[in-house]
Amino acid sequence: MFQPYQLFVGLRYTRAKRRNHFISFISLISILGIFLGVTALITVTSVMNGFEKEMRHRIVGASSHATISGYGEPVADWEALAEVATQHPEVDGAAPYVEGQVMLVHAGRSTGSLIRGIEPAAESEVSELEASLEYGESLSATLQSGEYGLILGADLAAFLGAVPGDKVMVITPEASVTPMGFVPRVKRFTVTGVFRFGMFQFDRNLAIMHAADAGKLFRTGEGYSGVRLKLQDTGRAPIVARELREEIGLDYFITDWTRQNANYFLAVKMEKTMMFIILSMIVAVAAFNIVSTLVMMVQDKQADIAILRTQGASPMSVMGIFLVQGTLIGVIGTIAGLIGGVLLATNIDVVVPFIERFTGPVLNPEVYYIDEVPSDLRIKDVIKVGVMSFVLSVLATLYPAWRASRTDPASALAYE
Image 1: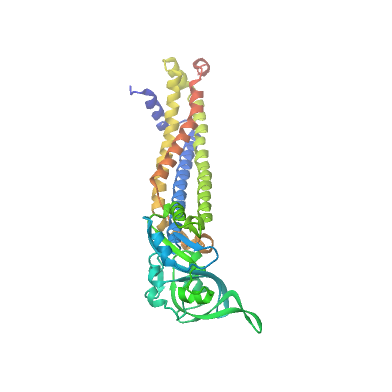
Image 2: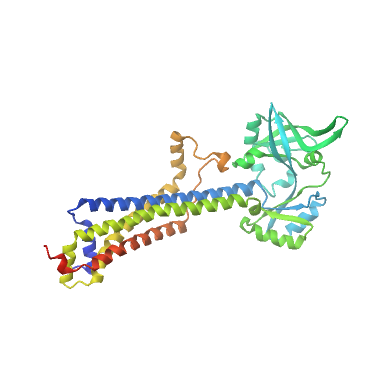
């Protein structure tokens, strides 16, 4: 006799041909439900992780990790400010910038845009703009002081219908007083480059020019809007910003990329949490199908239970038999789901393009800011989902197994 016999009998019940095939069907549905729920949980969690990671990478690549700016006044001596900031051990680079809102007009089309004036020689210290150029050899060659060159985001250029060499009208909101009244300041710039960060927010709404030209456009003189900083660890940006605030004082305003984009990451975190809860319900429903499976099994095996009891089996032993059977259903579904989820999450770059052949683009970049479905599979998420599914499966077996242990042998054998 195999020991422990509870395991032997429980496994035999799962293999034996039952008189009621409906029980086998419900068991199969339970396994499939757990499989689909676990697979969906792992895949969705990996996609949300990938979305958050990709958003973080593109945001910090296009914008600054931290920014020091004046309170409504231009920063005159940016070199001194940058020198103080770069003395911090976690600050790798600093570069000045001039920023403002304008209206761009070309070929009968107009749109609002954020203008960022930069120093080409220093910009590579704080951003990946030069590496993101689709047209233009380098920032130094593309933007030269006094030539009024303009680098447009790829989606912004496409909307305006502007290509390198075209003239674009830049209209500032500040007006000039003339004998004809208040007239907006207008300056004609030449498109000298196109960049693509791969994030719609920047590719559609950002234009770059030389800081000297931006200073003339916004009438800031030789001053700058502030200094942008690059940090060694973007995750420590709030801490570094707080430490810099103590060193620089209250004469300047210091912020970091997490505060500037807090709404995006709060939304992603909330969506990730809600999706986990909703998909966990699929696993829970499938796991509790085990209850109905085992209840019917207990009814079908009343005589067998009674015989085991008369031969000396304890109530706990009978309970163990059905715990083995219910747990086995959960383990099979969970393992299959883990394998399916890992395979799907690691091949999402193949699956999504195949689906897009029939449905079109899955992500609208105007809504989701990126145009591809990323995936970041993390082992801790796989373990968390697997443990949750297994625990729910075990909990679902407790009540039917307890009912089986309460079977009265005399009543069960009365009509046999």
